[in-house]
Length: 334
Image (tube, rainbow, N blue to C red; front, side):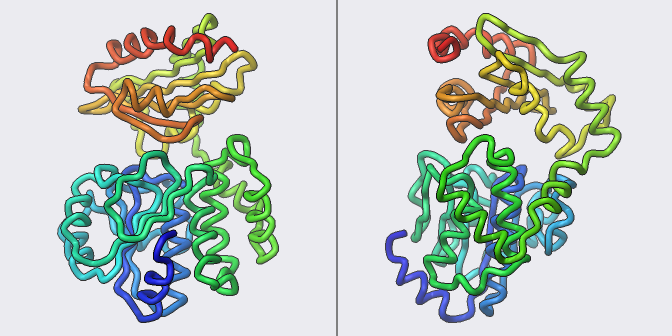
């Protein structure tokens, strides 16, 4: 991070800090935000965490999760909070359009801004930037940030549980990222008391009956395999959403089940929303779904995990997805 000393100087005096993360926050977004918030509170700062939309229910156990201010629920309160801020942290996103209308408030804010993120192609809207695309997660970078400040001793079990949550979810329990540095980080978190088995249970064994039935419906009724492209597709319609009363978080992780198939290298979960069709893409090996999402579906993300959107209906979007697969045939068949 350039000008780290300047940021240290700011943090030497109490600040009114705002931490923002992206729409549809996942484990890394919530974990990094709450972990950093707890660390900053420990150092005498007044901190508010903001998300554009609600977080999934399986993260509701996290410390101070109930204190997250949701823009969709109370935009006026978010505006008041951002206007009072003396320092803004932007976590797990690197473009202001990822926080929708809240991005305008951040853009207009005259206080210093800090970006901590691991996605490709960061936009230069922040005064201090910690951007590392090889990092497993933003939580890993928050851990690094605390060490950069020389405040390792302030990392306690509760902060560690937040950071470990983001690492677990963004790596798929270390299936998608497993560098030696990451495991050294994880080992240090375990040494300060983080309970890996407890967190694995809270995060991955928290489905309710409805969510399990949705998963069964997806796998039995909405699964299509394209063997010539080593690709699997799961779709959900508006009618599916209405029938199952699907809410945010109910389809979390569905796309990953496709990659359990031996010969599947590319997985797509394409689901119909009221005004848009969303795509969640996952891949194995060298297949770059970030490029696919960015080039064809106004999206982005990581090499093996990305997302995008389409303003066409579901059937047209699925057809368009299938039509681009020949462009990636060499990768898919290697």
